[in-house]
Amino acid sequence: MCSYRQKINTVFIVPTGVGAEIGGHAGDANPAAKLIASVSDILITHPNVVNASDINEMTENTLYVEGSILDRFLEGEIELQPIFYNRILVAVNAPVSPHTINAVSAARTTIGADVSIVELTTPLIMRATKADDNTASGIVYGWQELVDQVSQYDFDALAITSLIEVDEKTELDYVRHGGVNPWGGVEAKASRLIASALNKPVAHCPFGYGSLGVNFCEVVEPRISAEMISMCYLHCALKGLHRAPRIGSGLSVRDVSCLITPFGCVGRPHKACLERDIPIIAVRENSTCLNDPMPDSFIIVENYLEAVGYIAAMRAGVHPSSVRRPIRYTDILR
Picture (spheres, rainbow, N blue to C red):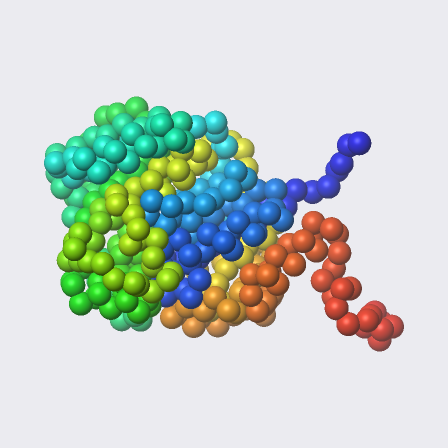
């Protein structure tokens, strides 16, 4: 029997480096992403949501889209072209670590990915800093030289792994107590710069912890535990980039059904959806350090379980108000 039901394509974001309670640490939004994907035909999300070092639990119907590319997609500038697989290039500072080679080999033998490695002639240097509003930020050196060098190769998606410089006290405070991910801001900055220059999918993974090193062995804040059981931190990006959509004809912003966001943050994705009357669902339980005022048109829910209920109602063609308190004639008369 032929069905003419409209597809539910959901965009799920958790901005990087803003201290999101869920998804602001190390892939701790994976369960929420899996749940949202289960009631969506396509889930469109970005690396921060599912990247958990050597773990990535994204589902088969998930599209892994770098943040600046996702912004451009929602603003109607580009479309996303689903593909079978990408040729992935991994850019690393010299010398190439055996851990990196093993991670690439593991991706080839378990995912079936097409991956190769290039050593950067100019090091990519990334230093994490904190902005005045307590969000994570940073400084990136050598990114243009990276773009110039990798542009000589034939590839579809770029993974980058490099050390991020963070002072030891900040590292220890974060892994023991949580809070704003100090690496997140500079990672997002580097990925945006490089993805915009290449016009291709990009993801960055930090190469281990600089100050903590291999001798650190403690029970940590649970949302950060994925970092502690990982060795190379690269596999999450290789899994995501393996089938990341390319920029090309295909899925457009007109195909987006709704955007799901943490509470208290409003940026480019939200403004793009507001301009196109795309419903925005804000999850109050997932707060951030930004505390941006929520526009009146946002649908405010308490948690991701309730957010999924709204998506399920869309799929069923049921207005959410009809499954709450009984409708009275006074609710209908205008």
